Image 1 (cartoon, helix red, strand yellow):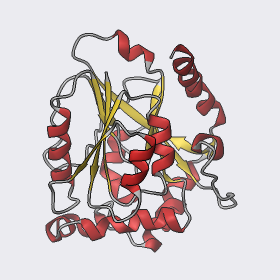
Image 2 (cartoon, one colour):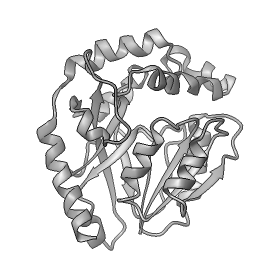
Image 3 (cartoon, helix red, strand yellow):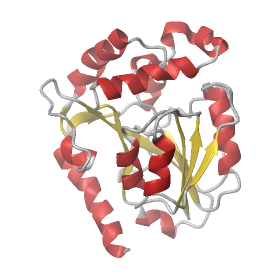
Image 4 (cartoon, one colour):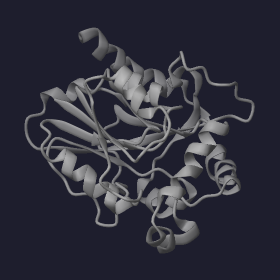
Length: 261
């Protein structure tokens, strides 16, 4: 059994790609809605009608509160479980997980994809991995944890037993990836159109005054439009190269999984 847990707020633009991809990987999904006002819930019901949709118990989109809620939904699940944002797509060798019986935890690294300056508009009918190939692999999650305000990506946890996330929240892990054939494709910088920018900037409208005050401008969700685009140009785009070879390698595992099913 594999379960994905996702908290979302107004994600109707990325949601079709995310659901279409992950319904092939996970047996079940638990979607936590932070009171979306767009068509996110309707899209979930259409594409994954058997997945759970819950309205959050939290008043704000604060890191620690999010993680405590995720923990509660994860705890009764059986088998593998993972919490992902709608910008995070899991790729690779999933078959290896079915052979594991003992309590196990893996830290999953990030391929960070960035929209080139001359990028073409994205087409909803094609997977993102066919349209966005410009990116880099985050080799130092321990450094990323210290630079979250610049949009660096830390490891995520994939586990087959209940865990506790960090008390301060955020689900960011400094541990280096434990598998080289499973990875997250992060598309938060691959959609730099009005929809992609708006989805990033809206998050701070759901944060509590205490969360905003805690880190101020260093909070990764407190960026302005100018900060967001400047960080991409300064810290992410210079690290990018054509990653079609890496994508192809992970897709081989994906296609093998689909063929087996």
